[in-house]
Amino acid sequence: MNYGTKTLTVYDNSTDITIATYSDRIKSANIVISSTKSAVNLTSKVKQFTFSQKATGATKDPNIEQNTLIHLKSSENSTQHELNNRCSEIIYSELETLFITGKEEYFEDGCESNFSRGLISCVQKYGNDAIEAITCFIVYEKISPEVASEALRWLGEINHPESYKFRLWLLERSLNCPSSRVRDGAILGLSYLNDPHAITYLEQAIEQEKIMELREDMKQVLAQLKRES
Amino acid sequence: MRKNKWYKTETIAWLLPGEFQSDPLGDLATTGNKLSVYRVEDDCSNLERVVAALAANCDKIANFDYVLFQETILKDIGIKSEQTKGETPDETVNNCHLDLIELSAFRLVDLAKQVLYRGEVKRFLVREVTNFLADSVQKGYINKAKMSLNPKEKEKIDKLTQSNSAFNSDQFLP
Image (cartoon, rainbow over the protein chains, first blue to last red):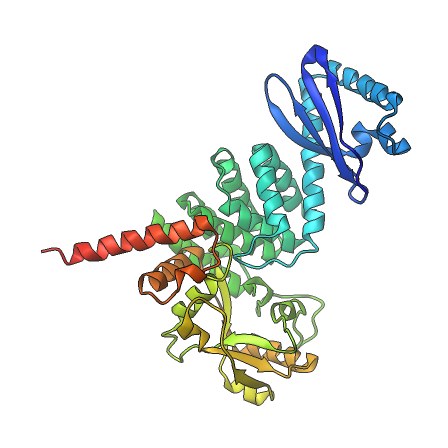
């Protein structure tokens, strides 16, 4: 079920907040915060921003606007740190939804998917903040190895210079993940980045790798990177 | 298919001796109880061309995971095949296409098991696949108009083809 778009404006701090449509199933909303300094497109758990809207299911009730304005005014007083935390929560929530729905997809090499498109979009919108959240999901094994592996492949493929170093770090770090599929995703991501910086990490991973086939695949990527260097 | 589902040497605690994980079966997707395969020469002389033709059917150029097995496996487990035309932009490769037919669930599991233990699961990395594609385009094997690759990927192939042509023509300069 979709709800209508509602726009609220807080004039005194030049911040527009748009509560866009959201789906009942995932219980999240797209929130666009644009200020004089920057514009970010964020997603939050509905309850954090639109609790009263959700309770009544209405969009024209002035009380909702009032409640939301009160909520926003209290946000005005919050520190930048708190705002950053909220942004992180929102990014985390959007990615969480993406990873959950990604589990239902069948991934094929060379084929884009809803998951890959969503992942690329998140990285392009949020940059390193998105990579930070993705790191949490992968390193702390909060998502299925299949989806984590797919994410790592695409993180190597994405053209986004601002997040390059962080993505390289995550791919190198993921060579030590407990799941063989995640480690495989990491080597494929590294084969796309083709950065000789990963050589040392690959050499260490090869020494530790117990699965013979995966070790051979790591050697194949290592050889490519050595040719590059 | 994805190579990381086909590891033979991974220790899985819950598997009994002789068993294998069910995930590889997902890579053997049948339609009408048929499975599409391509015949590769014993010396693998046409392998890169087959890979290029199949890669040209994708949205993006990516790594290519594949499994090679001897046709005798099919006879051993009673799987029939029939030659049908493939659907790639390379007509010669299309003639190497076979359908494995009348596949029951049991036969498919048998095939997966035989492929796992007697076949070779391999991978070409994205750079190699890109080179195979450029080579096939340059030699005129692949009909560019029939490639499914997105425009950005086609541009990548065009650039590589042009730089290869320049390199080759430089070699013949007096």
